[in-house]
Length: 118
Image (spheres, rainbow, N blue to C red):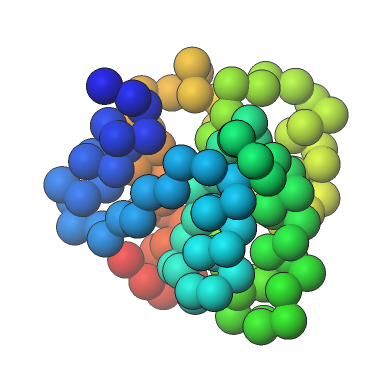
């Protein structure tokens, strides 16, 4: 099973509503038209790249969308990507191979709780 599907199921099991999108073009469109509580974002996507999606979220005209917490989940254990994502306001940067799904769920809960949600 693909990691995104496993993560979706793990988050739904603890009560989150999750919408999964599998390409960057659809992802950026959904994120810019919907005020999500949080976005989990991979950097390597077909179509629009994740880093560009993060830039576009931060540049959004809607303050609600521009302020959406974004957790980057990627296989890039690279300081340059980490620094760029943090500079763009990502609330966390997780390397897929370093964390079990339960840790990702904990990170989501932590960051949503920090905003008074979840």
